[in-house]
Image (cartoon, rainbow, N blue to C red):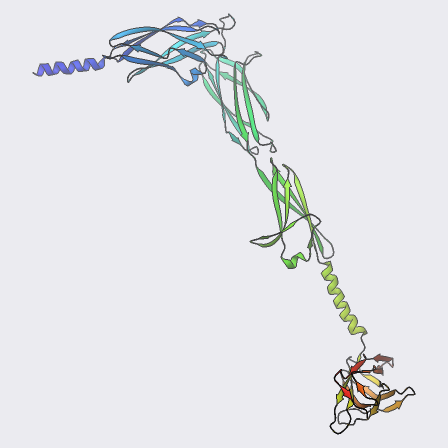
Length: 474
């Protein structure tokens, strides 16, 4: 029993040691021209007890150069099958020597065989270099920053390739640089390009060509695209000019950008400040979280500038203040130092006719004493003077009637101190029946200052009574 178990284990191990399939790959015609097809014999032995389909494929790099057929092969269980594998060069494939890997995938296993091919040029089978090229870079590019571009070269020949010349061309830049590659070598290089800051946003291409020695035609070419990003930086410069309570603000707003930019320039302008702000340029008043603002809406071209000019003018305010101060000074300088104010009041008597009591208020409002003050008042012909004698009032010095029926009343005061006031009072009775107001002429005041200069002042005229007053005939 033990021997039988051992034999079974060895049998299982022997079966598992046998490969699922075996392949044999030999060239039929592998030296071809550009318009020919390379052929190879492929024999696959299926060691499994069931039928299998085997898939044939190329690497991603090889698919850019060759077309493979067939792509699958079905082999019955425990049998072998031979087929012809064809590799046809694609249009644009460069002459040279190739070792093209072909992947064979079965049930749970895969193998790779190499197909050596010598691809000639115009009937000649001399050496032609074959170099793979990959160009990589960022798709979105800021023109203000250096633009790095990576180049990866792959020498597909076993022969060294010195004196390769790489030419890089774009709408925005160009350059050339040499590359030396050993046999089957891969090499990468990074090149940094400087772009113009004002480059217009858009899509641009990079075309890379590799030239061998003095050849006029490239042996490898590669094209790729990138996009220039839009950007915009606003720079505001201020230049002020001041002159006699007026400031002129000249703002220069520059658009350091590669695209046109809309920009709103704001100046704080509360209502009291707007009294002094002005601009010849069109603006709007807007309300923001910071209060009222004067706003200029500007469209600034790429790498261009616009100006905003406005003024803060306090000249009107200053002139108004100066005028007020000057008026006050002139008023106190040139005003009459004496004030004479006249008023009349009707005094009704139960046992007699009504009378008109006239008061003259006299005041020296200057800081100096007055001398020889003479006050003259005139009564119209419709009124007749009555003396009024009361404590605290100054009686007239003389009363004189004129031919026209008017009466003049005179007071003589020797001195009137600074800020001293006097009240001159007398009464008058109407000669005729009067209904309504009675006009009272002005009071004339004459005085001398301490230098002996004589000045005359007249008060405003006034009236006494009203539409409802009534003065009876005496």
